[in-house]
Length: 333
Image (cartoon, rainbow, N blue to C red; front, side, top):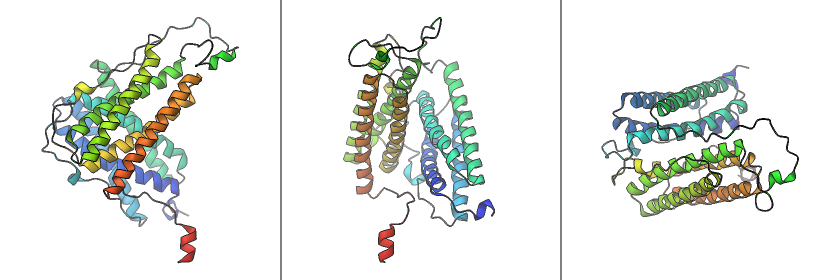
């Protein structure tokens, strides 16, 4: 049996659908950002990212068409106003791309081991390699232009210690050990995510048209600030620095470059990734106080996501992902 005679599995179908939706959205955002970018090097990076997203959408369109699967609507030029004034400074585009590539790497890396059809597996392998290349371009530019705040450097132990006491896990009571490297890593990552997310939400709240969408973004902005503060306090309590806020990169515009539908989907998409990044942090949090804090944050993000989905559904903006049939109802028809 050739690979094209193999039907797409649920994993392949679900990942392709998610990739298609996300990249049709990012095409509109990147096109808008490209218009307001004067730095030649940043423009090249945006063009590279835009070409990747465009190629992925075309490829998935071809796959769905060959499989006679309905093409998702996704997002198009009707969701972007290219004449709207600049909403974010061009320096922020680099932070946004870091935010974007981390989410993309998460989706693509999980897809590779879950896909069994060779053409789909190779497609996601290529996307993963492309996104790593994009990540390196962004990081190299930010480092060379002093825009990238590196994770903290910690003093090096002379000899590695064996853990011999149960208080290694303590957090609330008893002797509390210092943060270990992997805890610092994932605290730093989530602080950076919240700083970028807060700036995006601040910009979106300025330009959203529907009051309930505007209020939703304002609520998300406060949630991102709260999580930023709580996670930063854990680093600061041990005299470790963390990423700074990026609010000053949001410009004073009130004209929307994107539709409320796109902006709302965007934040839901990125907050879904936040649940996963908190999960990663939880898996490396050996101290009880850190684990409990992250679990609470994950629950707060989950509640926020549910509120956003309810708005999408109420406005008729929720495009349903692929799902299996209801066997009970199917048998009765």
